[in-house]
Length: 140
Image 1 (tube, rainbow, N blue to C red):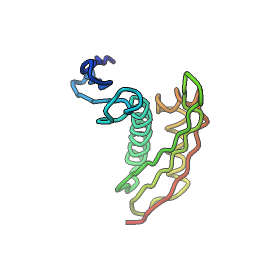
Image 2 (tube, rainbow, N blue to C red):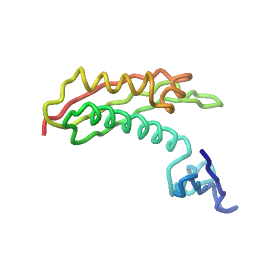
Image 3 (tube, one colour):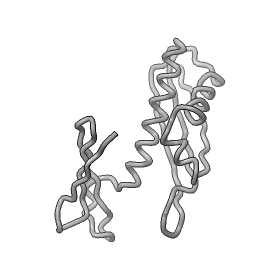
């Protein structure tokens, strides 16, 4: 995996990332840190990437199990250390999974499998952060 980061110029703290798969992502800092607040902060992208990684796993696990999953929303709330390095210390992930005939224990098991075996990002962040999860189901 590769990624190239380019600083967008001396007038701020914006950065453009180009991923190995050819996609671009912008990041910027807060105004008080010299940025212009025009894009997500780098640590927000870490949290978003972790959420995308585990949500991907959960949907894939459910689909492979032939469950009728129709939607998956993941809301993350994270806390960071007060001093540098300001690592994540706690992350709560609340999954709202919609579908037909989904069972709570099946979806909870898919979430657990992601966090225990498949999601590299959450397993990595779990080295510094206490990760908790909750699941709600919506019948559609």
